[in-house]
Each structure stands twice: as structure tokens, then as C-alpha cells.
Image 1: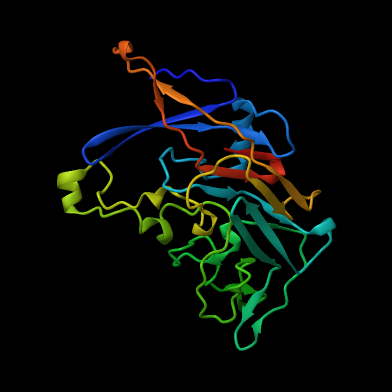
Image 2: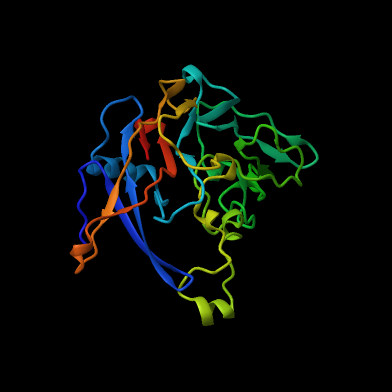
Length: 292
């Protein structure tokens, strides 16, 4: 396949099978500065993303039934002064989500939680949310395994929580709190993958299961989904996610990507337009970058 594209767009293509039919997906990716200005060149976009994403991928290249917004960020205390707790807020279009950010604490047997330690910066990732190796909704988190602290067994409590569902007892098992993508093997997503059984092997493979829920490819927590898709020009506000800016505000750029395909060996049919819809918004506040 030969791809022709402008310098600002990054293009992904992917094939998949469903109901005995083969499908081609085209994904257009565009980076833009949150502080305003021209779209990023593709080379600059991936240079910035290489460190920011870590082990995550930006996009699986599969269509989603709903739009969503994702955020890769750290919490920064106001004016860089130590705090024991704070809040991080993501507002974009109809999505309005707040997380409680709390200093390091321990759950001590027969005593309860310790007082939060002061902090200035806190990663807003699932390593700092509730979870543990045996917790199928977040195998990376904390709050289920004890650690040795100066000879005393203590249970580290999560730093990132849902403000209306704060942990109050050792038996609490809350949903992991975060703004970033959920691992594809975690229970919240895996339950939507469909049935991979002998019938699938004999009658469907290598296509996707017939009972797949296509929201399987939505990687954000469900409270960061839209009912439909992004239109562009939606306003956004990010609170306490930059060392020098307490609030980052703006509007999504009103860009539209168009894609066309020309079947090889059948040029007489002419160009065929492929439907494109704005499905996913990413924010990287410390990089001054958004991605459509």
C-alpha cells in the first residue's frame, strides 16, 4: 500500500475480519499546541510522544462506537507549595471529571490511615491508584499488598482516588481512579472482547468474535466517553496539571481530516472517500500538546 499524506498528518492503516468480511481502517492523527498556533509536523509529534507514552500505544487503529478523551499528566500543587491533598480536573466538552490527589499514607492495623505526607507533584497514573497484582481492574496499583516500613507491615493507600468514593476501610475495592488508558487485559475492557471458544476457532477465527462489544476499543474510563463523537471547537480546561499554569484552557481546533482510497489495478473507479470521524482526544499538558 502506498500512502500520500501532508507533513502534519500521521496515518495508520489496519485490516481486520468480522462476519467473514475483511475491512480496512484508516486513522489520521494530528498534533496541536495547547498554547495555540499551527499544527505540529508529524516528525515533531512522534518525537514528543516517544517519552510521554512509555509502554502505552497511542491508538489501536480500530473504530470506536463513542468518542473519548484521555489525559497523560502529573498533578502540580498551586504555586509549587507543599500540600497534603489537592484536586485534578479534566473538562472537555460534556466530560467533567475530578480526581482527589492525596499524599503518601499507610493503613496501619488496628489504627487506621496515617496522615498524608506533604507533596508538590504526583503522577496521575494507575500505579498511584487503587489496585494490586491480584486486582483484575488494575494490576499496577496500590492498596492491597503490605510493605515493610522500619520493621512494621503497612498497607500503602492510593494517592489517586475518586473524590466521592474515598477508601474508608481495608475491605473497600473501588474502581481505579485515573485519566489515562485502561490496559486491554484489565477486567473493565476484557469483558467486552467477546467469546473465544471452540466455536470461534472452528467457525470465526481469525476474525473478531460475533458477540464482541466494539467499546472494547475505547481505552478511556467510561466517564470520559461521549454519547457520540467530537465535533471540534469544544472548550477544554485542565486544572493543576502544569508546574507554571494552574489552569490550561482553550478550544479544540476545528480541523477535519479527509481520506481517500484508490484500489490498485482498478484506477478506473476513481478515488473513494473513507468516512472519518473525530473519535479520540489526547491531552499532554506538560508537553503543551493535544492530539486529535
